[in-house]
Length: 388
Image (cartoon, rainbow, N blue to C red; front, side, top):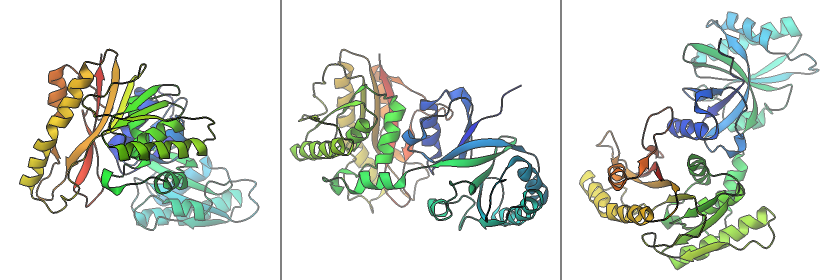
């Protein structure tokens, strides 16, 4: 008999990226995924390393009922709020109940817990959708016992009940993004959260040597420093090299690293000489013309043809590097309302022809993942390659 999962996460909007990141930090066969939620058995990952999880917690059990009153009775049996001396605030998140049923469940829970445990409840419901946002969690102090966020979610044929105990540190991401001393909107503004995901997809661990070929303002490098990897970087622009050094020194100061000296230099990604010991390449490449918001499909396809030689030459250069490498690249993918699928560089075919192993992302069986914000033309396609 399969054991009951012990932990869960509520994933962000990029479900495929969340699945790939989670399975890079845990055993893939220990994690199951559903809409907006995942469950796992065994030792949970370090949630603070996950860029794709917004909350996480422990599994209390499974429930069978779908009707609010019966479901409330089951939840009251699994949830212990005994010892609470004042009104308890309880929030509800779900992927398997519509908003009106969630509110009916809340009313039934108030009655059930008052009757069985003598607890007076104040209920918190999502303002939109069926999952509470960070403001609800913070405002209601839902991670501070005896308050709670309860997650009722279905994965496959099983409906789980979980209680949240961790929330993504949004303030830290904001600080790492907006308070960096050197920022430049012209180079794509890679979110620290995505940089964190890319490092996880590459399997970067404490003490690993990781190099960014297009270091820009150093977002990937500063995130690597945070997990105690050894980051080095290069960029064709002297201004970007200076920006990366400034931001790495700033992060080193935040981390209280004494005598830290960033190793970053000016070099073209198509010919850079990598330092000894580098085992991971993690980079966001050049995303192309930033003024393509109103361009036609034909113009975007032309932009893709223009950029392909850059990435082809980079991969050709890395192929001659004498040591094995794991390579995670974010490259441009363009979204246009006239097309159902993004316009992509045929980089998978190019890499395969060169002899690279293109890694399939677990659970999705995809050779590329996408990160795209609504209403933006230029998104990112993320690939993982191995050079043996």
